[in-house]
Image 1 (cartoon, one colour):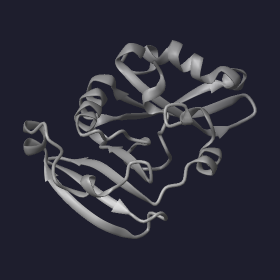
Image 2 (cartoon, rainbow, N blue to C red):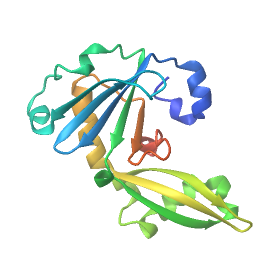
Image 3 (cartoon, rainbow, N blue to C red):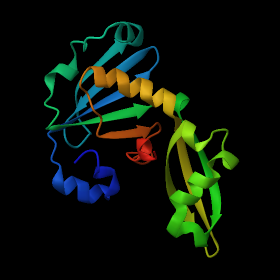
Image 4 (tube, rainbow, N blue to C red):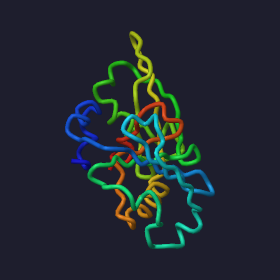
Length: 178
């Protein structure tokens, strides 16, 4: 389900997946912050900071909060730092709204310093007018995200969501433009 959940609205996904908590993994150089929340995300249950140098040098899962959760009952979030993302606003004619993802894929190298093959992206419409839509585009280099995901994969930790800081909306679709 987690592999296709990005295709559905978040409200629908929540109907099918029930979690007893959230574990957020956030890069805050030189540490990886691991925070466990209760369901509502307002109450921090546990927090731990792990030195990145120690984590990268070890192939074993560090003895942390990560050992204390059931992956089937806990939602895992990766929070990308601002240094790993580019957020920009683009304007398009209203007529492209129906095919917005395809248009962005085609135009991404024109509006950013990257090619489509170099990044994962997510977008959302932030303003709509009579003739035009304004889109917030968020990109992260594939290489940086793959390094991070491979680290977590070695620990058998597979994220349910990936988003950028500041968390102004969910970027759970970030790694899905292949």
